[in-house]
Amino acid sequence: MKKALIYGIVSSIFFAFTFILNSSMNISVGNWMWSSSLRYIFMLPVLYIIVLKQKGIHRVLNSIKNDTSYWLIWSTIGFGLFYVPLTFASSYGQSWLVAGCWQITIIAGILLTPLFKQKIPIKSLLMSCIILLGVFLIQYEQATYVNLNQVLLSIIPILMAAFAYPLGNRKMMSICNNSLTTTERVFGMTLCSMPFWIIISSFAYSYVGFPSYSQIIQSMIVAIFSGVIATILFFKATELVKNNSSQLAIIEATQSGEVIFAILGEVFMLGGSIPTLNGLIGLAIIVLGMILNSISSSKPKNDSTSNLNLN
Image (cartoon, rainbow, N blue to C red):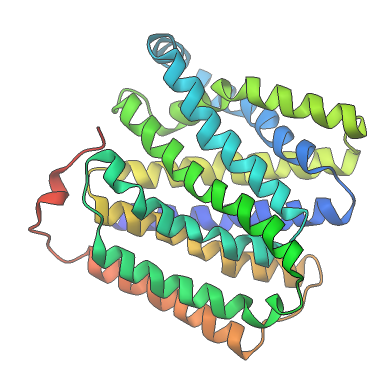
């Protein structure tokens, strides 16, 4: 669990680059459809080289061949219906707002557990609500300056993404059933989501033409930092605890760290404002919630949920 927790926290650092750079690209008038599709287009060759060196290409292709429809569906949901709404939302909200609203995925992941024949971990749900309280305080004062239309255009897509990401991840863990490594699974999902990204990039080209050089470079950074490094670390963390619904919920809750790192990036990289007293209190509550989650996970568990698997 300790290793999974470290992986989860470190992945949140790299995931924060998604919100910061998407916000930067929107400031420089980069199209959100190019921002989403380029990330996964750039991820594919990088992951291919990694998996090729690990001699896992044939394992991935055989797994896809055996369950083609499942791979296509859940990869598109886990990657496509996660990232397109997220980049769209970035067009209507600052990185801190998008990163903060994204933390609803903590609750979404917990609420999805009945779909995998597991009980909802009530303790983890309560702990996650503490983290969400901290997120609310961070955003409260700044959100008063955002109009309702902007809020709806950012929050509604984020809600879709918040459920799509853990659902796609958990479904693919169930389908692969330890037959592939984490990197191989991420490569397979990226490959199987390509038809979706080709469609999105085609729409982007028809609307705005080719992306700018700046957007290409920033999308490449997002692809490596967030798409490859963060995704592999986070998927590895969830894979380590996939048989324990409470610990799985805790690992998914580590992504609340994205809010802290997104705010720091907004301040130091994009010249955003420093959080107010409410914001600092919110940061403290987020850290407290993560610590309480960690402490609760280290206690012995005698309940039956600890031996359930994701089938």
